[in-house]
Length: 267
Image (cartoon, rainbow, N blue to C red):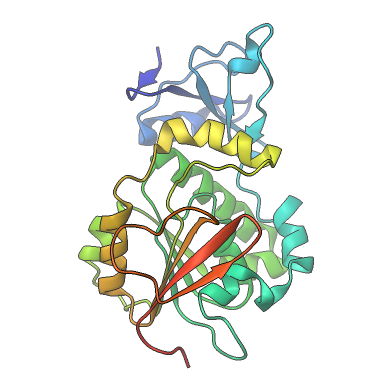
């Protein structure tokens, strides 16, 4: 058996030696357990020595294309390269949230996803609170943060500035009782058109789970009401702005842009 949320079936499998941890996680996420080599669900959340990953089981069907696994990795891979050679404060996300000179605003990333933008902002010295409402994506992110903290050194220091909250962002922003964030970063789900194989793989796995963010206008309203200085919204380069107030500025890259909603100058 596997859980069916109306869009996709999902189950959890643990490698040898991870039976107890897998059972505890399956209970927390309300997912059935199954053998990793006998998948019955369309998507499989796997726990092994490399951590938690999500993969499609379509590759287990003769003739189906292999999708590969997706995991949150702050220690190596693309994020390690970006940390060392990504351009620092000159990156578009850094400029969009107002990082410049000695200015390091407090940031709330209300659509955390796999945490890549949050990690970049934290690597540049910002304290970042991450909100993620989808339970499986939040579990992947939690696992990635745990491994980053256990790795020690610079990566652990960066991860120490990242705090994850599993919650519905709109509800959380409307009932926020903690320190007011200076900047809120939003990256609502949209139909990705990038040709990157990695993006295609992630969207193929995550869109059935997360769906489209049809409540993006409500999220923007809540963010504008809470942020003290600005809201930065990531969009496809040619997509319309989210319904609501017009942005006060735009920042365009090759395939995406940021709509900036300024409220007060960051100093």
